[in-house]
Image (tube, rainbow, N blue to C red):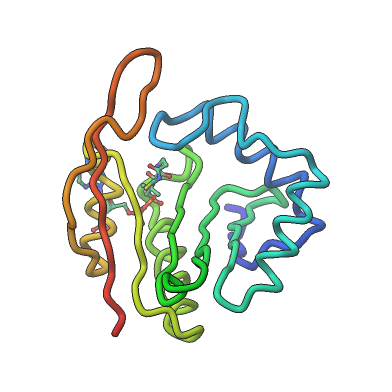
Amino acid sequence: MDEIQIRELKREDAEKLIEYTKRIGAETDNLSFGPEGFPLTIDDEAKNLENMHDDPKSIMLGAFKADKIIANGSISSLPRRMSHRAELGLSVLKSEWNKGIGSIMLEKLIEFSKSSGIEIINLEVRNDNQSAIHLYEKFGFKHIGTSPAFFKIEDKYYDFEIMYLDLR
Ligand SMILES: CC(C)(COP(=O)(O)OP(=O)(O)OC[C@H]1O[C@@H](n2cnc3c(N)ncnc32)[C@H](O)[C@@H]1OP(=O)(O)O)[C@@H](O)C(=O)NCCC(=O)NCCS
């Protein structure tokens, strides 16, 4: 079995990240984009990765297997009076689900948040996404409430759970 390496993504990883977002976007309707991936050029993605690297309260992690990204996790800082909070994002390719990769990524994102002084991590998750909700609850995230019709995919609405982890 190929070994999995988890590390911060840098601007040189932009093309691989774009390929990954197209693959994961085609595999799940739990994310804010579909098979078209995240609408960024390689240059824009490189700049975005550079900005995240330069921001002490943001990080973009990738899990690599055989030199391809198989999972992605992020902590994105918020500005001004929200700068004690950050937004979390997480995804793993379907072929790798239920092998503990999501848990390892989440653990690393929480560790990063603690070490960079983030006090509250926020996230939104589709309310029928049982494995993700299980994972977030396992790491101590609490439910704030339900946001109705958070996504609209081909005329169908999907509610989301709003969750947070208090690190204070
Ligand atoms: C959600 C996601 C990140 C989980 O990644 P993963 O690598 O499979 O996570 P893990 O293997 O570490 O953990 C999965 C957990 O869910 C549990 N699980 C799996 N299916 C489940 C279900 N139907 N109901 C409840 N729990 C379930 C597993 O038992 C495991 O729990 P455990 O660690 O207590 O045994 C992954 O499924 C994914 O990327 N999905 C598509 C994108 C997405 O939904 N991202 C989250 C957006 S908020």
